[in-house]
Image (cartoon, rainbow, N blue to C red; front, side, top):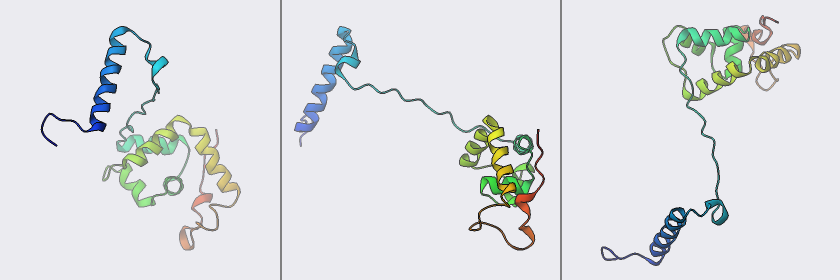
Length: 140
């Protein structure tokens, strides 16, 4: 293809864009001629310095072990976040945002799991850490 020449597809795209520009310039309501979608932009996850990680954990009244199970990370990871040795990943920060927005929901999830005897048998820990889901959870 030589410079300045468009393929048939390219020519159709340029023609459609020119028509769109003309409709905008003429004041044609675009939703009458074109598919219009509105997209809500979700903000980036918040930053979580050590004190804020601990504050979220305490907001739902969970021990580090129970909080680790809720977030599907190790207790060592929770400790490293709270001591400032590591930063939570973006997906963990998104989850922390969700917990901050609905602490009662997550507190309820922990209490339900504790009442049912812990996590499902498929994920139930064994040995010295088998008790972690029955850890103390403060009720309001």
